[in-house]
Amino acid sequence: MKVVYCGGCNPQIDREALAAGLPVDDPAVPEGSTVHLSGCPRACASGHRLVVEEGEQAGAGAGGASAGQDGPPVVVVAGELVDGVQTPSPELAQTVTRKLKE
Amino acid sequence: MALKTPEEFVRSLADLHLQIYLFGEKIDDYVNHPLIRPSINCIATTYELAALPEYEDLMLATSHLTGKKVNRFAHIHQSTEDLSKKVKMQRLLGQKTGSCFQRCVGMDAINALYSVTWELDQARGTDYHERFKKYVQYLQDEDLVADGAMTDPKGDRSLPPHKQPEPDVYVHVVEKRDDGIVVRGAKAHQTGACNSHEIIVMPTVAMREGDEDFAVSFSCPANAEGVYYIYGRQSCDTRKFEDSDLDVGNVRYGGQEALMVFDDVFVPWERVYMCGEIEFSGALVERFAGFHRQSYGGCKVGVGDVLIGAAALAAEYNGAARASHIKDKLIEMTHLNETLFSCGLACSYEGVRMPAGNYQIDLLLANVCKQNVTRFPYEIARLAEDIAGGLMVTMPSAQDLADEKIGPIVEKFLVGTCDAPTIDRMRVLRLIENLTIGAGAVGYRTESMHGAGSPQAQRIMIARQSNLDHKKELAKAIAQVGKPWDKARVKEPTAVAR
Image (cartoon, rainbow over all chains, first blue to last red; front, side, top):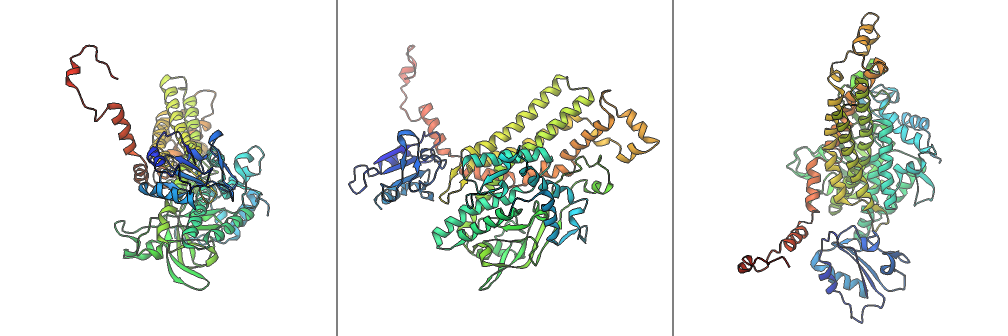
């Protein structure tokens, strides 16, 4: 699983703590999964997108990942938004984990 | 259908036969009424510039619904570039009209509703978004002007909508039928309402339990049965009756506000975009306000350009253009104006693509933008009045200038620099008067204060998004808060921070 960070200029959430709570070595998470982890709703890690659509390239350079219908999941965290849905900070890791395993 | 020409727009507006009241009378020929026509000219300019190749890049956009070129005022933003072009288009139109050109509220309404209806459908399984997309395509295909109507009269501000002694002070549903709803109430301060083909209604505050009938969003034709308008007065408005192109200051263009009344108006379901879903009313208010607060970083800047230009001309005609304090005041006006523009652009460039697919501005920066707009135009206006001098408010009338006996005396004593005709000096001073204390000040000053929400509304949004805890942590880290302090080290002359 890959975590793509934003630059972290004005984070509204603790990005490092959230990343530490993600299921990095969990075999239930498909290989090649990506979490775009932005500290605020400007969503810089995913190229200013709150959701990465199917077949779409998000993020820059080596951080880029594309979502595909049958491909590994791509989840966008932007502050307290997970794929554009308001999610309280304490529930972020759990919500992202659930989406990765869906 | 192709894009409308300005003439086609005016004709289509006349054909609506809107119910407009002004000075206690119903106005039938409103498109030729001297008080109303300048505001119609403003919207006509949004059609005129759209047809000119030199403005097409800003004025037109490609519809994501049809792939056709549409007027940007009917476009759903598809990128941060779209967001920034919107602001630049607004600056351009402010420059061309020196006035509020009124078409922004509809654009901001469709962009806010686009994402909110999508999210509402995801949560509730409704089909508001598909209905709304069809409506947007209708606006685009027919090249129509829509009024985004949000502000209710509100009555007693300490009470929620459902507890108001007079419930009609908030637009609400009075009947639900199989084929639609019946609504009653009013929307206040409606900029450009009498220049619109369509009305898009949204709730004005975040609704709570008990307010379900007031959480309603819909669209209707501006001439729907039961809709009528009471035209708002503006400072110095009756000068427009004087048949003079001098004393008005801006003879061709002007703003417009009206009280819009819904007297049991029927709305078919296909035109309803929210009906009772109180939990989504707050998001709609927030997003519309955000888009509209971005707008002010463009439109008021364009009007500011006109006022700065007028102040510079007044200085030239007064023979004071080379004075260092005048130059400095013009620099200050420019600095303030460009700061507003910077905020409008910043919230655009930091915009994000919503799950619905459209782009939304950065809410914090949009609120900062509008908060500055509640202040800077006042300072720009103050400096313009400073440069203009007192003659701006003591000058004789156009009738005096035209009088056979008095006219030459006025001309002789109001002369400035020798190479500038007195009439030009008077025209420029009247324009500054128009924008600072006359009819144009409605748009440039008070609308800057209260339009898109009064200052406190922005401060609430800024407070919500200020991320103060993060800032405190930054300060703690730099100041080494919490680090054990070794008093003994203070005495060591070689001690340095590590």
